[in-house]
Each structure stands twice: as structure tokens, then as C-alpha cells.
Image (tube, rainbow, N blue to C red; front, side, top):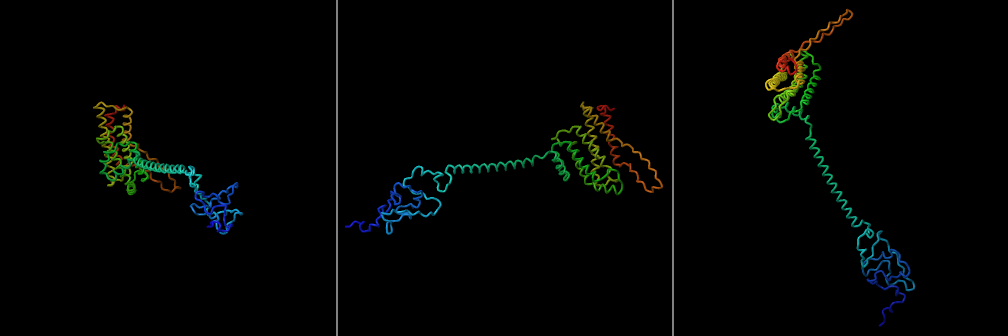
Length: 384
């Protein structure tokens, strides 16, 4: 039996390489790789992974293959992708099995750096959520603090407005609020009186239709003053059991301010006081009554209980009462200027010096209180 090799023409037998590549020597013994010639980088890039599959760059033994005299030349494989395809090795080294940034086919970060990036993102996310919660909490606290930290001076006008709208709430509110500073009360009264003055335009005594029109303009502001002053007067003169007793000097300053305002507002009340002026006139009577109560308590404390007050304080009380109850100086009417025949013009009438009857009656009612103070407590102020 003839040898199988003798059945083929000699020129068709390739002695440079076996017909099929051994899986154990994948990539070795191929033609075109002679000893002493350097191996071109990427020469094995065209090899496919798998057993029994030849590379498209290698010619299989068969018709048209080169003879032994002409070495086989390897055709450069077509580049299907810009990314290199790693070759398969049966034995993986420790270095190849480890994942690193240099061996990564797509140039991705290493596992350690990826973990660090994940940790950083997680920490930033946690820090951001904490910052949001902290800012939200601070905002809520600041809003709550700003709502609850209104100055005490702003509470008084609000409460006064509530009492003026519904006077039946006055006893319940006054029992629960602490004693407000006297300066704040006096400032609020001054603001109301200033509004009345701007609305009237003049504090002079007027008669008839002009006086009625002026009263109609200030009627609302006078009513506001009446309600506010009455509330303050009751609060300081009749403290509840839960409040501290009011100092005599504090009540004196409130009574002095209310009396001065009453003497200022009374001239704008028209003759034959209208019904809308009655609350204000009742306030004036309440001020006179409170003066008498205040004087009785001080006289009893000093003359019956042996109490004492500073000389300067008693002297200021005496001076204030005397100033309020004193009759105004009589103004002398100036002589009318001479009128020439060459000046045929009517001269304006001199201003009226008539005092409002309500002012006169109020001052006369205050004079007995002044005289009584001088008789009972004048020795404290070196008066007698």
C-alpha cells in the first residue's frame, strides 16, 4: 500500500508547517516566522480563539499554496476594530489574572480607584443630605424664633386694638398680660393725640358749623384715644391680684399725661356736646376720680402708716398738680391799628380769647385736688 503522501504532487506538499495546527502549540511553527527574524507586533492579532479554526491570514494546505522553495508570507489581517483583541493563553499568569488599569481593554479605572470614587460619591451624597437637613432645620428654627420673638413693645398696640374692637375682652386680657412699660403707653397716647392735631388743623376754640365739621373729622381718632386711655387707666389704677402693685409715682405720671391730653382735646368738643363726645367726657371724669383715689392712698401711707417719699418726688407732684390746675393768664387785647381814609380795607377781627366751658369746668374740678394735696402732703414738698 502506497504512502498517502505519494498520492499528491510534490509541489503541493508544504513542509514548512503541519496541515493543521496543534491546539497545544497554538501560534507556533507557522510559516513566515523564521529564526532570527523579529516578530512584528500585532502579528497574532488576527487569530481567533477556538480550536480547529484557522486564521484568515494563513493559507490552508491545499491547491495554490506555495511550495517549499518559496516561504509562505502572511497576509496582514484586516483591522475590524481600533481596539486590540487579546490572544488566548492556556496558562494565565498571576499578573494577567489581576485587574489593572494597564491591562483593561477600555482604559477604565482600576477596582480600587473605582471603589474610592464610589466612596467619594457616597460621602458627598451623605454630606449633601446632611447639609440640606441642617439648613432646613435652621430655617424652621429661625422662622419659629422670629415669629415668637416679637418685642414686647409691639404686643401692646395689638392688644389695644383687640380691646377696642371688642371691649368685653378687656377684663380677660388685662388679667393675663404683665404690666407694660409706662413709656410705651405714653408714646402710644402721644401718637394718637398727634393724629387728632393733624386732623383738626387748629386747637383754637371754634363755634357753630365750623366746630361741628371739625369734630366730625376727628371723631374716630378721639374715640380711639378714649378707649386706649381708659384701658391704661384701669390697668394701672386697678391691678389684678396676679399683678404687682403700681408705684404711686408711675400712676402720677399717667394721670398727669391724661390730664394734659384732656385739656388739649376738650376745646374741640362743640357746644352742647354731641352724643359721640360722651365717652370722652366720661374719661375726663374718670381721670378726676382717679386723682382723688391716688391722693387718698398717699395721704394714708404717709400720715397714718408712717411711710415716706423722697422730697424731690413730692415736690414734682406738687408742681405738676399746680401747673394743671392753674388758670391761664389773661391775654390783653392789642389796640386796633389806625385806619387811614386812603386804606379802605376791613381789618380782620381779633382772635377769640373765649375759653371752652368744658375746659373751665375740668380745671375747676382739679383745683380742689391740688389744694388738698398742699394741705395734707405739702410738708413733704416744703409747701405749707
